[in-house]
Length: 83
Image 1 (cartoon, rainbow, N blue to C red):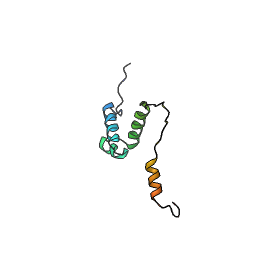
Image 2 (spheres, rainbow, N blue to C red):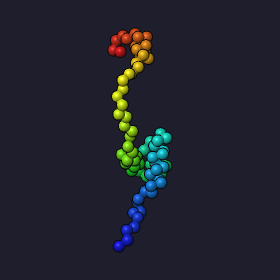
Image 3 (cartoon, helix red, strand yellow):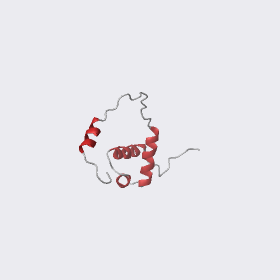
Image 4 (tube, one colour):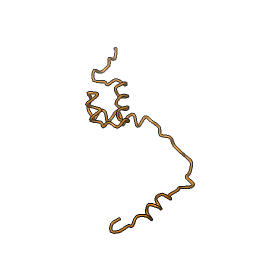
């Protein structure tokens, strides 16, 4: 028995193109219109690609945090009412 490719299976290159478009700022619906695929399918491709990537883990503890800009901003503004 020989397995054949499904007729509705989307090529890997198309999924990669969808990911590239998403990283450039296009939305799921826009990508779907361009690639002639449903926006739901595009969403799942992007989601699947995100799960496959391991994010870098930084194990160093932060010892010093500088907040001088926020301090200067808060002191400069007068906080009245609901602020």
